[in-house]
Length: 367
Image 1 (cartoon, rainbow, N blue to C red):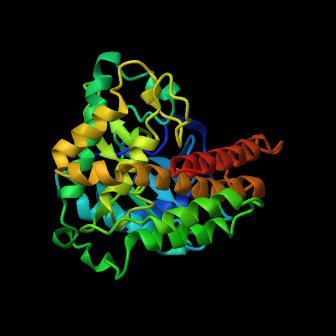
Image 2: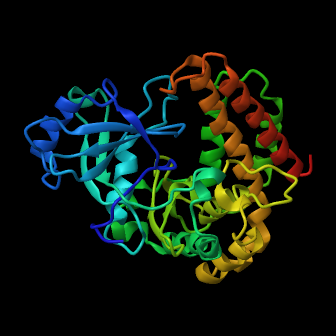
């Protein structure tokens, strides 16, 4: 999508009513915007800053400029993050590189690495209207007769992303020597062991099996890392307006994205929980097998999918457990920037999900 694209966020798009202070100081941000973001109109007073509800990782804010135009700002969580997570510059690089391509990404407005502005790296994007179905409740806003098309669009846009040559868009320097899967397994294993989760026995058992059964690496492509309907904006006809949340993007195996998408694709009657809440449990969405077939058709990866998709589904569940352990750690430490967690209920729910996903991954690998 062209540079005129706008963006919402990784959440459902609801806006908190109160202006946020400390995470994004409005006056300091306004001064920076005046000198670094000519697309944003700065008036006599500071821009408005509103936290967008939801999100378990990088925080998204809605900015309203002096002309009443909406923008979006992404910054890291307020604290308690793992060492290699939340690299805003890396997230920005993928968006800026893909902006001129047919892949629907947000308009890249401006990036800031000066911590004197808001206390952290951040970037500003356009703001897109549309439904961002982060959960079934948000997904209910999508017309029922558009949901099947929306499901197929998930496959089409993912295939389009995986067609992009990283070298051609200036991301070739991100290529690393060695195995993508080996690095991923090592990274998430290291980070889960840095979390506050005490019982890692099942997670470790899955890791051992995943290491032993790694398929050979294919040609590296841009892997989004969290590709699912909850990180997409849908238009009324089911078309995808933008892909959000590039926090985990890398150059990697495209089947890792497909496995993550299908592991999140919950349908009525499923006996195994999805890795995250989403809209696909509602009426009208295609079955997961149809999405896989559509991606295979559009990408030309049918043989690899037949051979390796089960592995990548297990990998997705294990990785979800590792990521969830980091989120649990931030909940337990009170670093999520969210009210109402003092009773520990959200932390307990996240911990239960970590163990459930690890168990599902182990079962998928034969126990």
